[in-house]
Image (cartoon, rainbow, N blue to C red):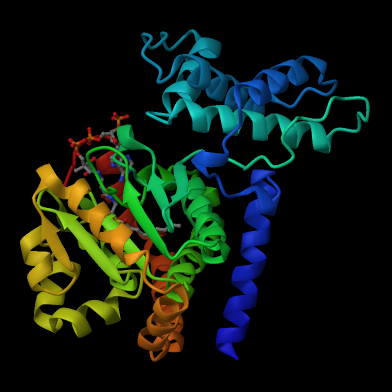
Length: 391
Ligand SMILES: CCCCCC/C=C/C(=O)SCCNC(=O)CCNC(=O)[C@H](O)C(C)(C)COP(=O)(O)OP(=O)(O)OC[C@H]1O[C@@H](n2cnc3c(N)ncnc32)[C@H](O)[C@@H]1OP(=O)(O)O
């Protein structure tokens, strides 16, 4: 019963996420091969000129940022001064797109405009050429080719720290990947980090919001981890660099973990006044024994890739210089194996402990909900934000 309720809650949550992102569900897969053409883009730019209803500042900033990224590439102009509020907001929005490829930005722009025109009441507006358009993600790059769907975390300037939006987009991307025709799904990071874990600015809130935000955070965490527990196809982590916090603990829910020898694995929960998540309070002791798990989860010992491999958290370590080439060659070969056999074998391995993992996930999320409201946690976050503390 608990499992069924959990699944219902997760299903509801995905619908809520979709509506909050204002993008139709069927459009959430962005395949590079099917991206918007230059003509689609120009038609979207023209369509914006016809829009009757002001879409509001937030949307206008997104449109501006994606337009600039699509036409000029990554932001490399000087940051405006703090008092130049409008230009600073525009610069921040553009800069936040990091190295998002021009094609993805173009696609995102087309999708945003299309979402605006379909929600507006103007029937006279020109329909975009591509009803086949794929919705974009703002914090991820999602591609699909050679039987492999790749979800790439894309906030390289912030070490791929996970914002609330990013957790939501990852859930949507996993949902899309679970239904597409690929054989294998891969999660990786853009830039030097795999991910620096939870974005600590998620905690920048006023004291009177704390209780409600902690409650919502716990639901988001439970649903996020639940998507990994239930993911039906082989799931591979390509750990391109250091991993911190939840980007380490979640790895035990993957089927293969390939790491560059530059990667490190760090779970500084106690330092942050927090406690383990992603089922690691159960999976880590069962994987490496309670003493080694305690060293990581209680005392925050940072492991090298070789150490993480020796403890069973990582499948194989590759030299950084050949990492991408070796890993993708391997994955392309695996992706040619019979799809259904892979899927069924995965489920046979994972199904034994699924219900248990959901129960542990719910309990860990409940405990974290309390922790996030503690002075220990708040002080640790304040220290990071005021740069008194770094890992
Ligand atoms: C729904 C909620 C679910 C929550 C689940 C619970 C999850 C728990 C965790 O994941 S705990 C782990 C949290 N992560 C951290 O504590 C890492 C904090 N970051 C650091 O210590 C350092 O940034 C670093 C060691 C990762 C990298 O150091 P360095 O190489 O010196 O780079 P910078 O510090 O200059 O980083 C560049 C830029 O990125 C910002 N940034 C990096 N990581 C985070 C982060 N986790 N949260 C917020 N911001 C981050 C950093 O502030 C810099 O930004 P700036 O250029 O100053 O604007």
